[in-house]
Image (cartoon, rainbow, N blue to C red; front, side, top):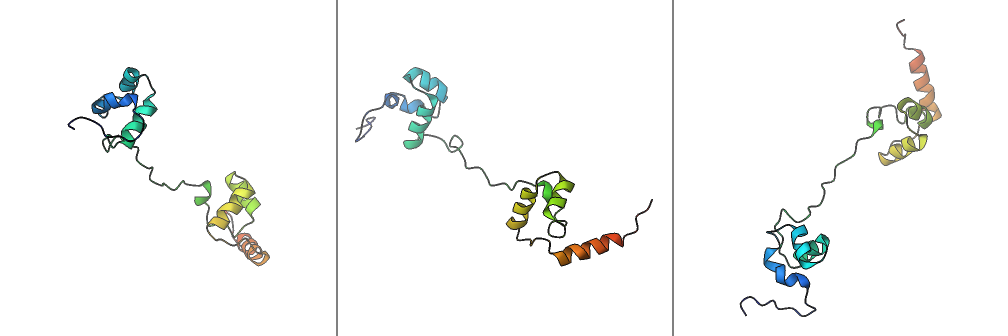
Length: 125
């Protein structure tokens, strides 16, 4: 049993191109076998014929940045609508951002304190 393939199921048209998978491109093998490159890839993956760099690697999870990251100090101190207008997004986006990071919404006391603090700042003309 030197080069025979032991299988329980049906034979595949790709069995005769088994030794070329991983050497030739999937497109070239697909043209020879009369199937799609996706079929060649799946056959190679199922039978462990692909090299490690050919196997699709899972994407590393990368945190997407938000426009609200730059003004995170405003979230929870001002109303969601005010922050949304300042940044250029919707109030719903601000609300979702606030809930995601566990920031409580601006209470009337916080709004009054923020308003008093802002009025106390002397702006240079």
